[in-house]
Image 1 (spheres, helix red, strand yellow):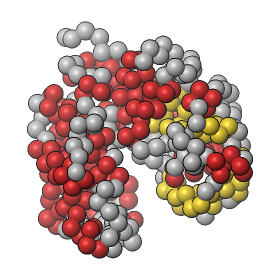
Image 2: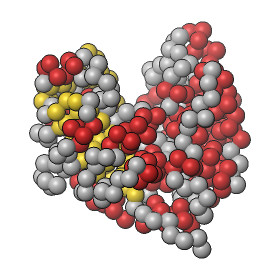
Image 3: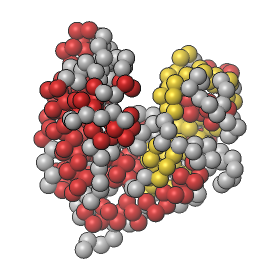
Image 4: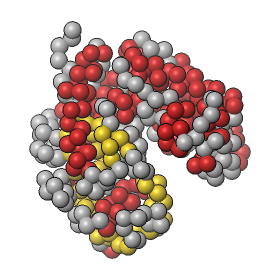
Length: 374
């Protein structure tokens, strides 16, 4: 790997992927861009670049970021890449793992942006099942670094960049290698403890599906014409969120992982304080003006249930940690969209940890091998 200028492959050409590809290119890095279909790629192929509108960026002016390779061929996209940034809904991680498995090579780093719950474990399990023997480091970010939106074909706007984003690798003792490589381009990335912690600190599972389920009528009636956090989360809704959050924290306790409560996360992320979760949400100026989705069949349900809630529910079943609130929300969300979201979701089988003891799970994420039961 060229330590000064690694070559990046960005997998996904949606809002986040085009923002990352354009930003990296304008920083002077060579970028390969992959997407499953060519609909979003054709305008970029024709221009040879992505126009970046960047009022929220200090390190680069707005401009046109040249993209070296634009392709629907995973092998072509991965060829020559040092760091692979997977930037697409978590429901697509399994597909990306499958198409990447035959082409990954020694020394490459794959980062899921973000992993949601169990993303790195699932990705690792799939490439091993597909016979990948390359020495590849799989890592996941706790959250996505940008707030961005594609505004036109081959044009994207970045509104802000997070100050700090934890990243963890499997095995965790190699996390510093990943962070060192990433920080050439992104000084915002910091070492996370391990992928159990980055996964279980996925607070999106608290703030997304439950609020959507409990506001489904309002979403359909107003087409999202209300403030999602400040009006959609009333004291009674917040009480349900806190109960679900307690289930998430108990899962962390069972695995020996110190998981931050949603209320404490709001204080760390936004300096929003309160005696309870409702007060902390109401005190967060960052939520002002954020409107609700216009439809119920939104990623807050379609992505966050199968890749956020479901792995926690499945893990709870295996470890004997009750998650009744998570289960109820997942069931109601499935009813709202007319299909069983849990059926295709991440389970302990898909994460490659079915039947492992807590000690074996800990060894897997920290050392890369679960070893024998003890």
